[in-house]
Image (cartoon, rainbow, N blue to C red; front, side, top):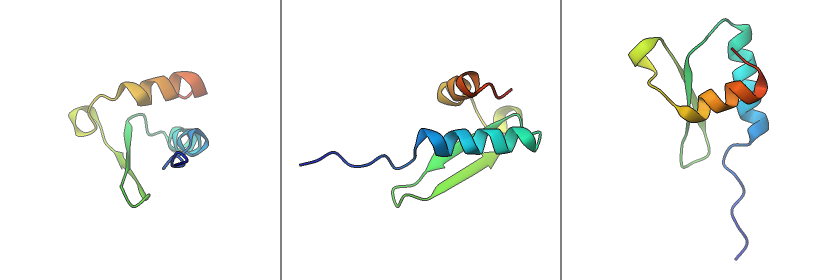
Length: 64
């Protein structure tokens, strides 16, 4: 059985991160639902929580 395609691609995450950075949003979380839909949650402090994957994405893409 072939592997499933990714429900979200790195290109999509990069586009989200750069768009949010352009809108001066510094903290966000991307939720990928089982149906393939994406939800972007923005907030500050404990509203968003810590996600090491987002930190790594920001580091790789140069988003601050």
